[in-house]
Length: 260
Image (cartoon, rainbow, N blue to C red; front, side):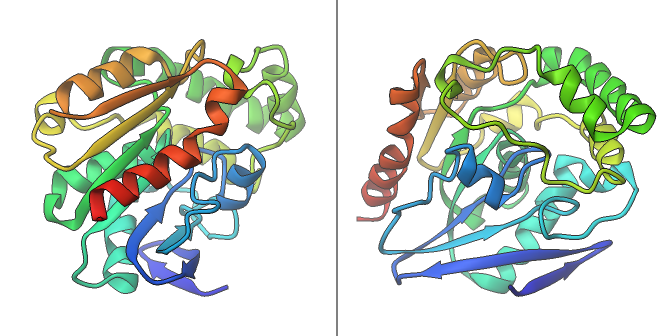
């Protein structure tokens, strides 16, 4: 697989080139493009007739990273995104897709470079603004737990938390991150937030927000606020695995409708 150098990391990336419109798909915190496939969050599967770029964020999957929490702020991940887009899709507008941390990365990138994107598919937006403060405390606690007890302690602590109803059929997985980097990633996540609402309200590309229910880490309140702020956006909520299974088709429909 090719790698792309950014400050403090090398990003591992791949492209499925079937011609057509450029699309970039990101992933969530502690995940990777491989793990998202296992979790049924690889919405690009079956997305034919596009040039689909997938890459592992710094410190995740096959990409490298360093033990600097600030490296993993979403605004810094947006820098990485914009740089790799300039490398793979120079001068082109790109359809951005991403869950959770990937959603945060996309929102920082488009508020900084609005002409770089043709459309957005924002998947399970994370805690933000008022709800981010308590989540930041959770991340710092998780970092301390991993340092004290390793990956097994972190996995055991999370085992008692019920999954969102839409994901009950997903197989169990573990973070696709080197355990030595995991505390740093959590502390970086504790330092970050979505762009201010007034910046999100300036987004003027076709946008679909995909959310699910009963997940404190990805509350409906964030998805609803983003959808309300971005004029003309669509909000789709999954309550069952059957609803979740429709998301790749919804992405395909959005790509076709935006670029026909």
